[in-house]
Amino acid sequence: MTRAARTETAPSVEPIGFEAHDHGHCVEAAIAAAETHCAAEGLRFTPVRRAALEILLREHRAMGAYELLERLHEAGFGAQPPVAYRALDFLVANGFAHKIERLNAFIACAHPGAPHSPAFLICRVCEAVAEAQSAPARGTLGEAARATGFRIERTVVEAIGVCPACAEKAGA
Image (cartoon, rainbow, N blue to C red; front, side):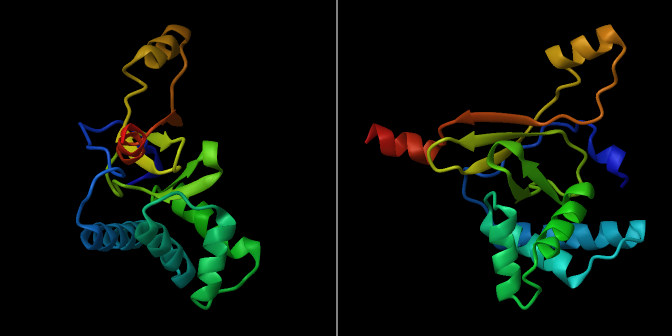
């Protein structure tokens, strides 16, 4: 799947991040999707890129580049910042991870291989992040773009609020 195809909106995709799910399955499925995509596109899914993706997948939260670098170093990879940044650049460019601008952090894509336009729901209390479906081309932003002749290629939608767990704690 091309990078352009990944930015199109897809049918309803359930948000992932605030509910329980089969964690082992999502890690395996995402790694398999990355391997398949890389093979089809002739991309090198190097050991450090794979390790970076596995770390993001297992954490199921947004991580800063330096935290990822520390984890990569613990796994036997280099300790210089370019190690993490190059892996992250590859993962983001190919749709396996997303950058959360608000947190200056990265999170594994919850829907690898599926064309979608993600929106990120960020808890202001615990900084947990859920990935949900967004349809900016269909809403007010899409209408404004069409009215000016602008073609949306990529959007970053981030909403700040309180996750269910923190809301429950606050209400107790």
